[in-house]
Length: 334
Image 1: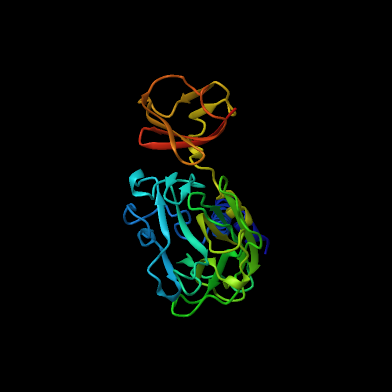
Image 2 (image 1 turned 90 degrees about the vertical axis):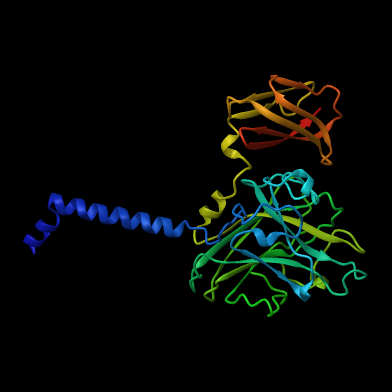
């Protein structure tokens, strides 16, 4: 026994054991930290969208349509031209930066105009998880949502996540149940709201569905009468590790925030622009008001500040185009 222990603890074997434990630990850490959602912020696509109802161009995702209506979820990406209505941050549904990176999708979670549709209409997206869930294991789920502000939308509750073991869309998923959903009406059109929760898997769930899985009679809305609720969706996460989902919720263009600075915020008379992203400078800068209307456009901007003394008080969005990258920041003018 002593001889065996001496052999195992020899300098050479000790290094082998150390490597074994390091590799094992790293493997476990990577396994635990994995986000099971493929293409979680819709960055990967087969073609850049040039119109609405083009969610099918998002890789690894599909749409589920109840009663086979012709409408479908929408895909928004900064690669799209502004004239298409599906660019970011300005698009047909409103004005919103991506929660992270350059893309998000949009879905209808409530539609009560029975003159147009005799049945309730909800749009739902789904994907196959990177690996099936394990029975008895706890999973953490989160996603970012924002109510569109350009369509006169009403707010609704019940937006959430449902997991299934099948992806047969002929089977109705409207069973008034979701594993994670919001019981409050999300009405914030400026910021991204996080819907999150956790549960212990009771099946080997393979598919993730996102939408409103409750009948309209069980869905609360912010205003009576005919209305519809339309939400942007971004940054979806499913993991055995709660920190993975929390850390995946990034700020738009966070990598570039230290290289492009817009200050002070709020501003009174002058708004200073500091650009260290590229030696090429700022190719274009667009200033929008809170309604998404263009207030000013600057090309080949070389100044250190812009004069905002004549701007009306309120919320503005400044989009800076530099070296094939886009940086957008919200600013308040006093």
